[in-house]
Image 1: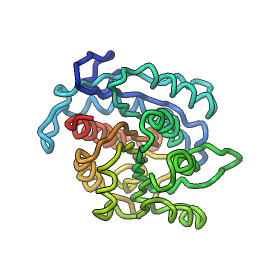
Image 2: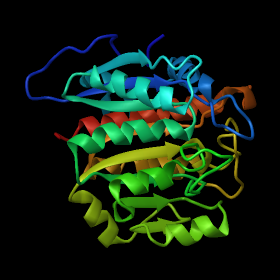
Image 3: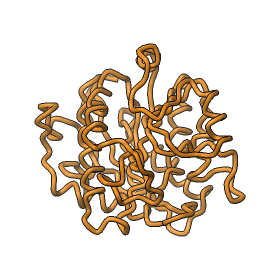
Length: 282
């Protein structure tokens, strides 16, 4: 099953970018409630319940060169195996394709950022997340769902990371967050931070636990006092002002939401993100 109107192979178009859906069904370092490995399949399934047309953006996925590049093969893999497999999957994409990644746990963000950083040395990373994910190590692992943004900051530089929506973490993590370009529990940022993002290529990583559990219960580590779904979608629709070179939606865990509404929301987020990103030439 593909994501909505996506083809299974890219159709080259001279001078125009494509959006490539990629699933990374990995949850090997999840520590509270595993299940996000089922996220890519659930989001694709849920996408069949929504329209390809966004009445807010007045665009449809049929207007986009969109293809579904399938899932990264991570069966039986640990973190290193997942990173290698994800990198190889990305390397096989057409050079004009912008990855739209479906997780999986948040660790899957790291190999995507690693690959993009090779092409964009000034890459900025915009994190939308309930958790800081800034531990230096967790349960003996240097790269895990709890350390992923620390590793991203080590790679791209702490001043290249903007973190919004964070409301959970250790005292040490919040101290580390002070070294980032910006970190806030609110879903907004000062004008000067937005202007800074406008000047560089941006990767957006969105952990579904950013959203309040009342709107998105299907995640491994739900946190109270989250962002409302309506507020998040409004924010996503403003991202067209940035030069986004890739994004992900991670930590959808279908076993904890029998209603499927978390996956439907994730599919809607992906649709809106694709439409706003593809409307702006890279």
